[in-house]
Length: 229
Image (cartoon, rainbow, N blue to C red; front, side):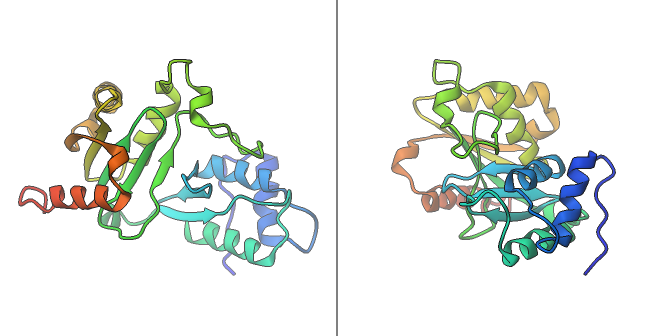
C-alpha cells in the first residue's frame, strides 16, 4: 500500500476521516457523511441522474451508489475508497485532458456534461443547488429554485464552469423553451472569459425528444467537422 498523506489544508476532523479510510474497519466506525464531507473538500461530489454519487478529483472519477446504511461496513467499500485516494493523489497529465471535447446539455433543472470521445459513460449531472450529503434524500432541484423555476446563478453555473476547466472545446445545447443557454454563455463571458473563448458552438434542441445517445451523436458529428477534428 502506498503511503498517502492527507492534503495539508484539511481540518483535524477530516484528517481523521482520511486516516480512518486506510485503517478501518479494524478500529472504529466511519460514517458515510464524514466520507462525503472529506471528498467534498478535496474534490467534487455530484448527484447523478440515476441517484449515484460521482466523485471527481484531479481528473479521476469514482462512482458510489447511495448508501443504505449509516456507516461504511464493507471491506470492498474501504478498498474502493483507498484505491481512489491513491490514484487521485496527483492530477492527470494535461496531455490526457487537453483534447477533451465537452458537451453541455442545460435546462432550468440541471446541466449534463459529457466527454464526447467517451462511449457508454454516465454524464456528470449538476443541479442548481449545493448538494447536502447529510440529507438521506436530497431535495429535487425544482424545490429549491427562486420560486420561478429558475436556478441560482451562484449555485448552478459556477460548478458547471469548474467541471469544464479542462475541456479544449465546449458545445452547449439548450432547450427550445428556455433561456438557460443564453444565460450561461453570457455568464461565462463575464466570469470565465477563458472558458467562453473555448465555446465551439451552441444549439437549441427539443431535449425531451432526444436520448443521450442521440445527443452525443449530434455532438460527435459537430466535432468531426474539419474545423475541430
